[in-house]
Length: 102
Image (cartoon, rainbow, N blue to C red):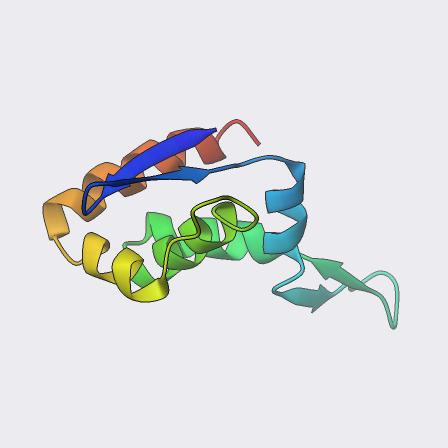
């Protein structure tokens, strides 16, 4: 479990198997070797986008990791928090290291 303090409120972010499944369901691609079959790859897609500097991907990852947690962060609060480029880089670096564990 990871925590961020945003505007004086502590929010928890869980990067477990449920998070991975939720992220993967977001994007599916066809499997070349098996006609009609698709593979869920959302986590790989959003992690790569985040590594490339896509702040929206970071927001999507954090929003998904906060799913089911209390308190639930609002999209506006999360987006406001990551608007600072230095803060965004620190956050992204931290979560890239977490992503490497998968």
